[in-house]
Length: 483
Image (tube, rainbow, N blue to C red):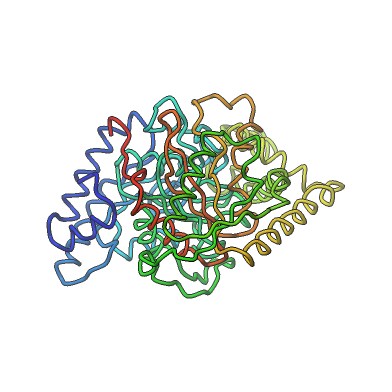
């Protein structure tokens, strides 16, 4: 049962081959047995899961149907879940139980999805390795000595290890796509504003976006269908109709124009990954796609711009965690200033403190124009590059990451080295574009992903290309040894 995809589970439930309750019990037992190796969950919600599974079975018995009705999933632990710990991977929120459900959680619950638990993550979504969590590092099921990617590493490791078929995740600079690449999954970052951020604890508000992590493009289409849509509670949510993402999966790729940026194939890219990307291009050509070399000249400026904008927004967003209203509070503060200092110093980890400091500096008097304003101007140049490219091509293709997953601890002493691993993913967040990573092969036994980018609200096109590619390759079907 644990090897089934979301689509297969939906068919099995519809055909009454098993019940949601039976499936939920199997997966909860599997998580209890195997997750100690991975550390992919922060909280298990057994009682809630069994309640939801029974309710889903009753709804099906009464004649209801739906692809997510009775399907087991998990939520990244920054989506607020009513009455359940929502920690954001931080000591700061270790004791926080959300008083309400995030819109994404509420929408998926209404569709009948069963919540098995909350997954581990880099603290406040800040990291590329899932090593900054207060609850310890997550391990990559393909090699337990390697990182699963971040910040959605818990969701990725759990799905890759077949502990559950799919999970929610978030992407601020690649935090869905990079873990997908490192763990042999399909991960989709939707257009900014496509999925509500209400109840999703913020890291960088103009960059954060929720999306699905699953084994196939077909499953991502199913989960995104349940997540997407306008939300009046979110001022950045866009009132745009949500298409049927599954309906276009079977479309032909004949004549599809795929752009390959020359800047992607620089000295920083592992040549073995470059070879796998070329193999993917050839496969898509066989399916009728037309390949064209393009240029994204401002890509080289994206990382410095991102690492000014994101920390600046983080320093503002995380100012609310002060030891007064909720979250961690230090013992016996001498006065209000001592309360602030010690609560924040004890509650935040090193990476979060580093980014708050950088962001506060960039926004400080005398430096705003030199750093933050200039970074926003570069952001516009990055977006303009994409707009020019999409006048010539339908999608853009390249590597998701410059290297395969590194060993646990390998980049801890050099934060900038980890930041550089986001070189191919952050441009989509700066521009607000949808992006998808899909399995493209292996290097030294570790998975590699190929990234697809599309114009705004063209998630269906990305899912269509990925699905057609997956019908003709088997990378996505491979399972890590021992799971």
